[in-house]
Length: 167
Image 1: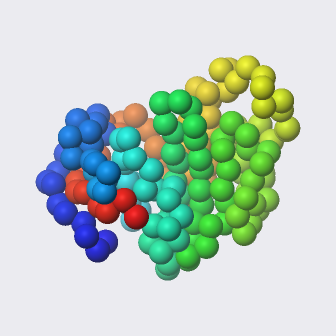
Image 2: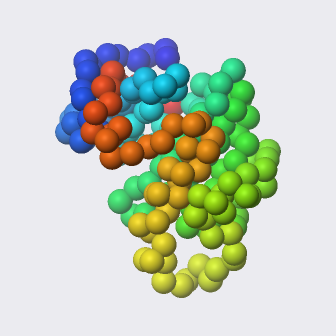
């Protein structure tokens, strides 16, 4: 990617947190990328490049990108980009509201992954859903990529690290 600057290798997702906070700033984001069975697993702490349409639409040309974002305030977003097109975009807590060029193509897969597609009162108590939503997001990503995201994978993956322009 234009403007990328390398910062070595780190084994395991936990090791990415410190450098992410040290090297990220207003104009650059620290990212770790690991090769996994023909795919690339990218992890950002304190970042959102993976769900930034300006970046992902361009990067997805000729390939599929599946991205899940979750911040400390439980704001989340799941995206499926393919060949320069945002096909599915939704907040896992509110999976009944979907956007993109093919928002309903994966309804069966979403249900099988554990998403609740029924409309709920936005002011209700959502605490019961938060823990399950990351698992459901990972399960849907597995259905789209064939890659199972496990604690073992996160602990042993070797990440090539660098900083990228914020978009």
